[in-house]
Picture 1: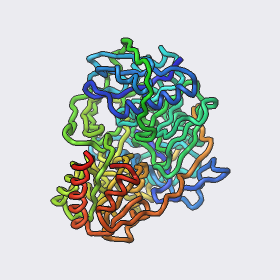
Picture 2: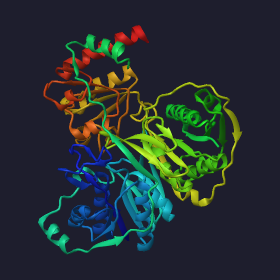
Picture 3: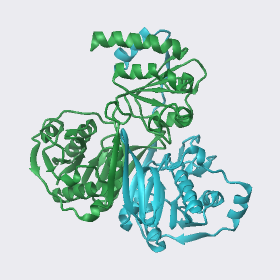
Picture 4: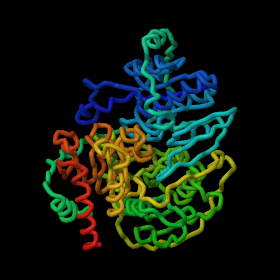
Length: 246
Length: 322
C-alpha cells in the first residue's frame, strides 16, 4: 500500500498570534512551528499500517524551504520519503490542487490529512483532494482499518459516530481517535539521524491560482475583566439579568 | 440568480443551524438584491423555511438520500445552485456540512471560506470575516471566484425571522452510483441527550472533580439547564468521560451561548476550543487558574460545595422562570 500523509506546518498552540504589514501577514517572529496536530494523528496511523501491514509512507507539504524541518520531523517519526511543493501556501483550494496533482502522479492508495489545520482552520484540503482526484473521502475519521482494497472507517458525527465502507483510493480527514494521543511518537536519536539521509524532494508547483485571499487580519477586542462573585445567588442573577443566557 | 442555502434536517425536522443559515442567506441576498432559495433534502414540512427568509424551497425527496452521504448531497446542492444560477451558496458548520462543503466547492469551482462570523462587509469585491487561529484572530477574506461557498460559524449570526413566500418546488437531482461509493454501514447516535454540537449551554468538568463518580452533579446541572455535558482533555484521556465530550483544540469546538467550566484550570488548548462561546463561567478552587483570566464570571471555591448549591438555586430559578 502506498500512503501519502499531508503535513501542514503550523504555529505551536502556545504561539502568540500577531500580524505585520498593516495586519495583512502572520508574524512568524519567535513562533515555533510544528506538525499540525490533526495531521500527526494521521501520520501515526500511517506508521501503524507500515509496521503491521506493510506500506510505504510519503509525507508532503506545500510551502517554502522554512517548512523543511517539519517534514524532517515527519521523516524522523518514520516516514520513508518527503516531498515539498515549492510555493507559498495561500488558500486551501490552491493547496489542494497542488496536492491533488502529486496524488494523481504518485498513484497513492491512501491519502491521510487532518480534519483541519490549527492555523487557518479551513477544513477543506482533504475533501478537495478527493474530489479533484476522484478518490473516495471520509472526514472527521476516528477509526480506520484496511483490508485488501476496502477501508472500514468510523467517523465522528454530531452527537455520535457512524461506520462507513469505501474502496481505495481513499482520502481521509483524520483527528484524535484515528490514533490516541498516547500513541503519538516522539522522534528518537536514531530516527533523527536516519531522517537526514532520507530523500526530501522539492517539486515545482503547478499552475493553480488561489480562489480566495486574505485582505486583512483582526484580533478580537480585548476581553473585559472577570466578575468574581461570592454566592450562587449573585451568579444566577448575573447570568439572567446581565448576560441574559438563562 | 439567487443565494442558495443548504438546510440541514434530521428525521424530517429542520435543525436550528438550518434556520440560522437561512437567516444569514437572507442577509446576504438583501445586500445583493436577489432572492433566497433553500435546498431541503428529505426535509419534511418545508413551509417553516419561509419564516426565516426563504423565497423558494427546492424540495429533494429521495430514499437513497435518507442517510447523509457527503458526495451525493454535494452533487444535489451543486445541481440546485447551478439551476438557480447562484453566485453564493451558504452551508452550516455541522460535522456533515463541513464534510460536504469542500466537495461542493470543487463541484462549483468555487472558493470556500468556513467559520464565517458576519455578513459580508462588501459584495463587490466579496469579502467575509471568519475566525482563524482557533478563534484567536479573524481574517477578512476576499473571494476571487464567480461562485462562493460560505460556511457559517455556529451561533455567530443567530436565527432571525424575516417572512418570505417559502414556495415549495420539487427538485430531482441526477445522481449516479459513484455518488454512493462511500457506504454508510451503521449510525450510532445518542438520541436522548443534548449534544455539544446542538447545545446552547454546555456544562463541562475537569480534573478538579476527582473522579467519574462525581459527574452526577454535572449531569444534574445539565438536566436543569437543558445543556450538554463536556469535559477537559485529561478527563477523557483518563477514561472518566467519553472522547466525544472532550472539548479543546484536538477535541470538540464549542460555540455555546453559555459555557460553564467546573474544576478546569484552563490549559491553552482547552481555551482555544471554547473561545467562540459567548459567556464563560468558571468555578475553581485555585484563584490562579488561567481560566479566571478568560471567563466572564467566576466563583473561587470548592466545586463540591459550590455546584450542589448552584444546582439548587438553578432549580428554584427554573421553577419561577420556566
